[in-house]
Every structure is written in C-alpha cells, then in structure tokens.
Image 1 (cartoon, one colour):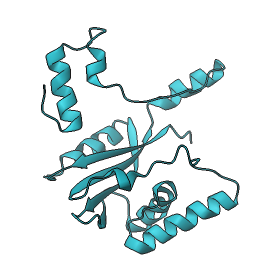
Image 2: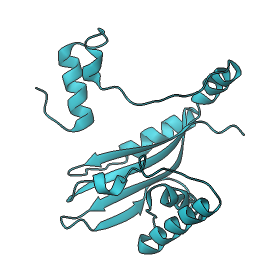
Image 3: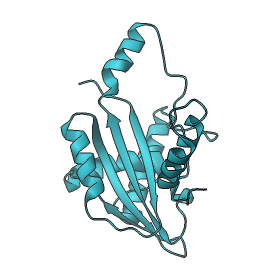
Length: 180
C-alpha cells in the first residue's frame, strides 16, 4: 500500500467549544479518500503550563497507543500521560540508536512549547492520500520535494486570488485575530 505524505497540523483554541464538527469533517475527508487521520490528540495546557492529553481519533485504544508512540517519537508526547511521554521518548531513542534521525537539532519543533498556557490544541497527524499519484508522477519524472508550506491568504492578494477584505477575513479565521 502506498503511503502518502504525512503532515502534523497543530490547531490552537483559546476557549474550546467542541461539538464534533472537526471530527465530522475529518471523517468526511477520510471517507472521500482525501486524507487518513493517523492519530489526533487534544492537549489542554493550564495557566501554569501543565498539560492534559486526550485521544480524539476513531482508532481503538491499542491502535492509538501504538500510533501515539509514533507521535511521541516525533514530539515527545503520548496519550497515556507521563507513561506515554516515556514510551514516546523511548521510541525516539530507539530510532536514534537504529540510525534513524527524525529531526536534527536545527529542525526540531517543540510543539508543546508553542501551545500558549491556559489554552488547548488539537494535534492531527494526517496522511494525504490525494497526493500519492502526484508524488509518484513527480518521482517518475525525476522530481523531488524541495520544500512545502501553507501560504497566508494575505500573500495571495498581490497575485489577485483574494481581495484585501477576503484575505483579512481568512487570515483572521486562521490565526484567531481580528481583521485590520
């Protein structure tokens, strides 16, 4: 089975108001074979920076722990509290001992540090199924990925894809900021 590109998306919430909409949308994307949610965690960080983790995806607990160990190896966090973090750290250490480097020190991303105190975040590890045929076609043509990233709607105004007003509204939605 071809595995598509995998992406970790971290979404912040100042005052979470979950009603199942996010999971429903991820389910819709999965059912259309657009993406597969490998794992999803909700992280609450209290005012002192202490974290509490809850599992969000529709995987079984055993699957979540197994895949959560993979996330733990990536970011040092698991769904089983300190035990999960230790398991994740062990998985990362074993990968390093086996010669596998997930992130260099320059590339390391401290996801948990970026979550503001007294807020919550959803960490969603997704596989992009839609990208498999494109990736394979690029590889057959001798191509390779150099870089990737999301482009801010504000950057799309100059090339005419959004009006300034549309871009400011979309940017405000994506960053939880008021439009200018």
